[in-house]
Amino acid sequence: MVTDRQAKRLWRALASRKTLAQAADKANMDEKTARKYRQLGRLPSEVAPQRTWRTRNDRFAEFWPEVFEQLREAPGLEAKTLFQWLQGKHPGKFDDSQLRSFQRGVKRWRATEGPAKEVFFSQVHHPGRLCASDFTHMKSLEITIGGQAFDHLVYHWVLTYSNWESVTICFSESFESLSEGLQNAVWELGGVPQRHRTDRMSLAVNNASTEKEFTDRYTGLLGYYGMEMEKIQAEEPNENGDAEQSHRRFKENVEQALLLRGSRDFLCREAYQQFLRELVANRNAGRRKRLDEELPQLRRLPERRRESCKRLPVRVDTGSLIHVDRNAYSVPSRLVGERVEVRLYVEHVEVWYAQQEVERFPRLRGRNKHDVNYRHIIDWLVRKPGAFENYRYREDLFPTSRFRMAYDALREAQPERGHKEYLGVLALAARQSETAVDEALRTLLSSDRGVSRSAVEELLHRAEMIPAVTDVTVEDVDLLDFDELFLHKEVWDGFQGRCEGEVDGLLAGTALADVSGMF
Image 1 (cartoon, rainbow, N blue to C red):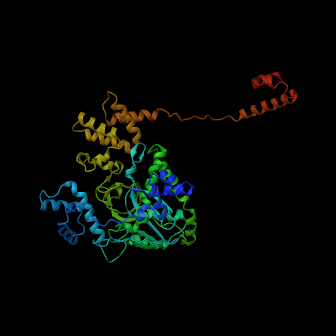
Image 2: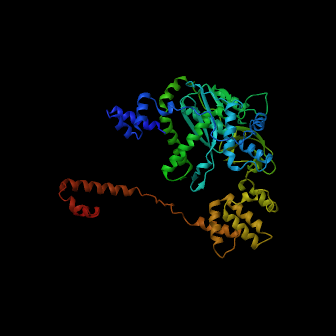
Image 3: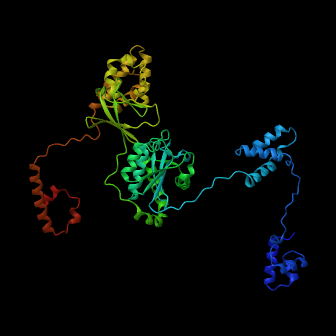
């Protein structure tokens, strides 16, 4: 059978003025066949008759009607499921090796008689009109900070026309993260697009209610910047395809940059943030031309950023705790019973009372977590030592591993009073220095001396009596010494004038008193 490649080789040989016999020989075909294709001027594939008959008997011919009936009633059925159903209905009739032939038959029916498939319509993007955003997890990239796993997300914001993008590191899909990331993007961009599209995340869209399409906080944020709100349909992530595609390509780019870097570990979080900033800047550099078309179409920014925190009025309970976003935090016991305002930011929590900030601590990630600072409650624990043994948040009252080791040693040495002694040590850490107490515990635990409050106090007192390396004593200066200096200066100036520099080398190492004597 002559192939298209042979025919093309024949024509090239004929075009180079070779004889028909020579051209046929070069194309590896018979001379009569060569003459045929020289006259036709068409490829073999263009003149071959279309085959409309089967070369093998269809083993499923008598069963297709019942299979197709099943497909009409339930188009979602897979070919493999139907094949297994057919095997069960007709035992021993079909072998597993016939599955592929059956799948081709089902595929052919779907393409010729099956239900219509969903059609996706490509959209025309207009400069400055639409931006889209979403969160994406970065766990698969296995980033570490100082050797420790850094589990985080990225809020990803993109302009759909130019694909200009901005990323912000965050740790949960919270409204505070969305607000911070969106505002970072528009202020870095220097303008505001007309519309913002998001998926049906609960922090922006009222999925459980039809009274309001979007949440109040999300409406307030976009209203502040004058952006219209868009959401995708339920279970249609392709409608937010600009953000989804940007996620994939951004993470692929990060993966490649990490491979080039040769390490996934960063010294600190700031170094990792700088790494992402440079990567995004390089990606945006190639979009400058289309971005220049968008910038004139953007709206002006407001005078200042909108606050990205969530404000909550909370009453301090009798345990000196506040419960915020399903997590517990301790505050100074003097606030027990008072109503405070909690400001919940992306990564920290502020506690305000009487228009003053009284506490600030890192925001806990996740739910049902707790952060109890022993300094807030130690005074009352010392008064009520019996409460320590079964305190719900007792593990938070061991600032370092040495404190825990000291507690265990005290309980072993003094089963009845060990917890009281430990609370005394903890009180010292609260009133003086946690670092100094930790160092004192290290000394006691590594020596034969037992751990006790008095032993820790003794070591702290001894350390206070030893002057630090940086302590410098400056003696009072006698002003009469300056008169003597001026006298020596006058002597030196007179001597230098007379010698005119001839004895500079000789006097280079001579003391001032010796020079005065010589003069």
